[in-house]
Image (cartoon, rainbow, N blue to C red):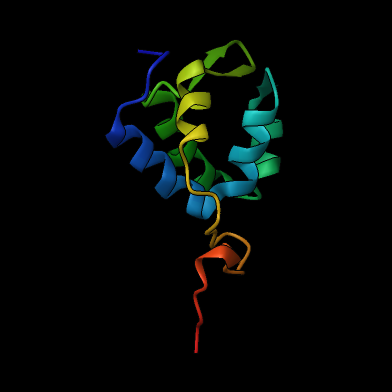
Length: 104
């Protein structure tokens, strides 16, 4: 289905988000884009981008039409459920200060 994400699909997208937040945040902010723009936004070379892109297609998080890439309602729903406080793609760990976590 292109409209509803299961709990397992949300977990899968969460795992992708921890490494590819910039690209996924870009994708959720547009109504459509193209493969080249998505690849450039990802910062990945083809060997690393292609499996990620393929996973998004297989999970029905994006639809393709010619050169256009469209985020699906399922993708937007799953993105709204993610914990975006922790990201590893930037090399910086962030945390919600309201959790009062001290790292020593």
